Length: 267
Image (tube, rainbow, N blue to C red):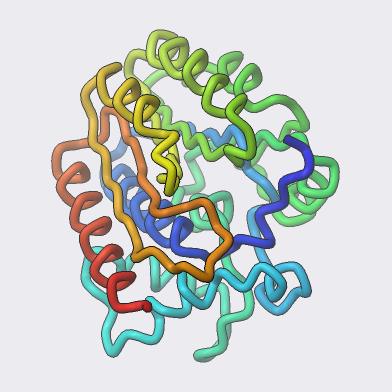
């Protein structure tokens, strides 16, 4: 959907879990000599000004990154992510929030490649402005599902694909149901990471079970307490990660457990 703009939701609780898991996995992979080909199907703008009217209107970062950074000390599994977020800001002021393109760009090495897909005109323009000068990065204004499937890793490259759609409609779930098995067959060695919202009405349950049966991997999910005053349809968030190393399956589960414990104290 071209109406969706993540700036209204940037740095929220879902971003914290999603980005903490992503940072942990990418950091672990860079310890190996194998080059990485990193792909995002729904990149958005990649950098978010939390002082903007849109972010303030959404007002979701207070329960997300701000709650984490107000802790007396950051739990070990989230430190890589927290340190990276802080590196985009000066002092203790949190103004800029790095989305997944910014976090990946910071973690990955000069020899790695990054490909970002984004269809929304304004988001694509901002994405180009933020990352177009990076020689490692290719930015395409194209459908991320079809575009990603046209790519292939070079010799020895470890492909890592992040899928992070808006889920504004049931069509987003249907597109992933069709795309995911194709992608697993297309790249038999690729790590594929899918962000999955957990809804109050449980509409994702059948889809989540379907994803879990496709191939081995890890599911790191966390829920937050129900807020009767909240108009959000979300009740939690999860990352489905295929083919990540076993140590990262365990690390992702730790991140999710810590997030759920933090959120349990939020209301």
